[in-house]
View 1: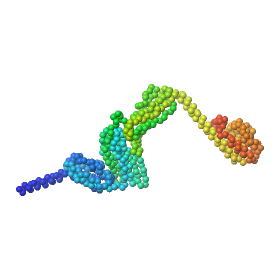
View 2: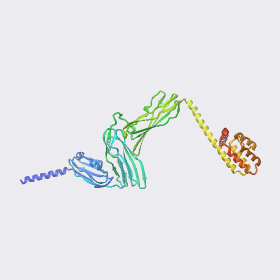
View 3: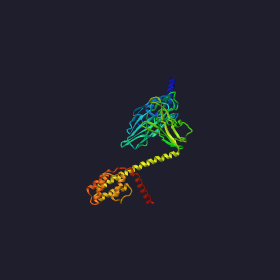
View 4: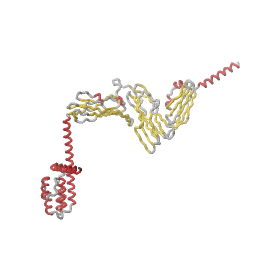
Length: 490
């Protein structure tokens, strides 16, 4: 009887030791960590890889980001990054040989970094682009902020990560940078999107890594009456104006600028396919330049389209409006955008040359008229100033001759009578002119009389700023000046 009881106890001890050896061992370190630094969890035991797959990890993922897992069937090493500060429990795990009661990790605040996450909406339409944004502030401007994709991102989604910040603000007390990751789901149903990673390279050898919560998005199907590739978002098209007339056979370009908010470039339609083929118009291959930029949470995609064409027949032609149809998720309505029609005249090349000659000739004449008006006004201003400063009758007469010499044909050697006749022929007679001639004859170039100076000033102020009669005289004088200038340079 004693031997039987001893054997039973020996069997129980053996089974207990065997169970203890089979039970997985869980090691966690460190127990205290700063936000941005990792916690390492190692689980070792027989076939624990399969046991771990059966564990519900939802609570663990709410508190920690499982950044990396490596090992084999009997040993797993986890790199966990806390998502917030405080006492975070690594929850209990019970599956097969894994018997873990849970353990608390104390996560201290990282006073050097502040992050404001803006996760995407949890309900969107298929083909609709959404953004995951992060506003990152560091107290030390020397720290480098890196925005990158999660190493275990969902490969079934289309991503566009903007590694460069779309907004910056730097100062003496730190810097703030804003980043965005663009996501486009292409399948209907619920999809899981992993958080992007904010990495801070600091003065230590260990970078700080920060994570947002994983998001589950419900992707809705578009209304059944819409094509599968319908753009979802907002579209605007600007079309550059064509010239009023072009010549036959001339290569001309249509310019479209297509702006799309939160719409993938691949879903934007090819506008050139809507152009109507005609024997008179030869459409050539378009040039399309896409561009992407992020601004205040909106992904601004652009297509700059240059559509060259030639018209081989003279006449009046119309470029028809082009249409872009898109689904606006905010109003849940299908909308159309139309460009304006453009009308232009196609004329033979010879007629275009003649029109250009006429147009540029009129422009040249207008410029010359303006220049001569300005020149005549300057001469009048100089005349009045010199008359006001004159101290002798000779200086008054010299100022009058200099003015008329700049305005009319060379006349420096004219007598008072000859000059008088020239002015009457050019400007007509006036009471002020007669008074000036009378005073000049009386003084006979001697000491100035107040009446002579006053008469000269009064007459000069009656002169017009522009006299059309003198226009061609000015042209002849300027032509002579140009000839003298070019001969002198030779």
